[in-house]
Image 1 (cartoon, helix red, strand yellow):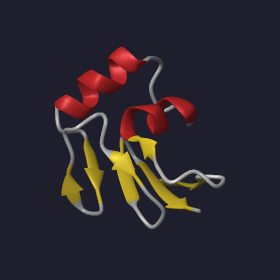
Image 2 (cartoon, rainbow, N blue to C red):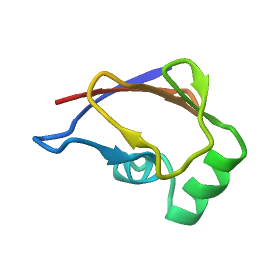
Image 3 (cartoon, rainbow, N blue to C red):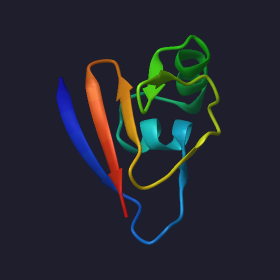
Image 4 (cartoon, one colour):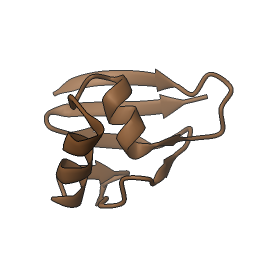
Length: 72
């Protein structure tokens, strides 16, 4: 698995679909929507199907062989 660290850079949160796009793990918002809706993403060990889920510091996302750790 590939590990990524993502900084919120002073923001309170980022939407799940936006995070996947920013890290270039999906090519478009449409792809993010489909893959999230299909249950391919887990947030803190639990399947997440809400593409607008607010991701905050301390969250850990697993997707397609990647682990994303979010910090402030």
